[in-house]
Amino acid sequence: MSTVDARPVLYLFSRMLDYPQASTRGDSAECAHLLAGLAPEAIPLVESFERFLWTQPPGKVEEVYTSMFDMNVTHAPYIGYHLFGETYKRSSFMISLRERYANSGFFYDGIELPDHVAVLLQFLSTNKDAEVERSLVSESLLPALQKMVDAKPLDRSNFPKASEPYKDVERALLLVLQRVSAAWSPEQANAGGQNG
Image (cartoon, rainbow, N blue to C red; front, side):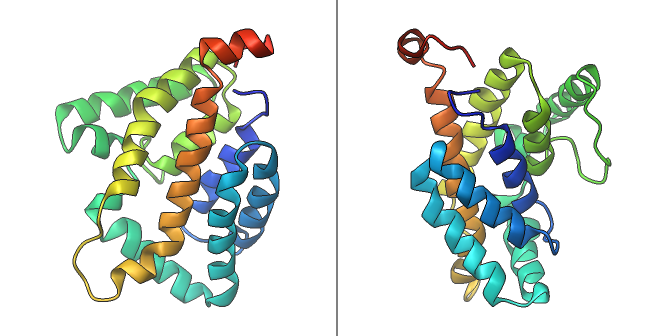
């Protein structure tokens, strides 16, 4: 991945971007700790999310998650949707993801579509194929996440404030993926003598 192994961090981001569970608080705290060696600039964003989790009842966290991802097309958690819309290309993308998952022995519960950001991040957290990683990060995750981070939420009263904790997670993940992607540059590979 990079000089610092990003796989544990990507796994924790997959947990934070999945439907909230009791363990999400611990996941965010662990993620903030691990970011020190990978993308320290993302720590305040994850800590902000962690504070939200500790100060809100579980029902409110679930409500904010649903408002952010299920009721707001600009933040739909489906990477293929942001890349291709509801087109045949998205269907092809999902089929290719299923094939990549199967070929690498990655199995998930199938509740979510294969292009759900949490599923993709879980896959990357177990993946050991550098080429697959590079293509998914640079050609899929980075452009889709940039769209999500740049998007304005739907025009609803108090939605922007309510969505901020998850916007912070998106921003933090974008910083991490940019850092991981930068580690693949030829200059860094030659300077460090390491490949992803």
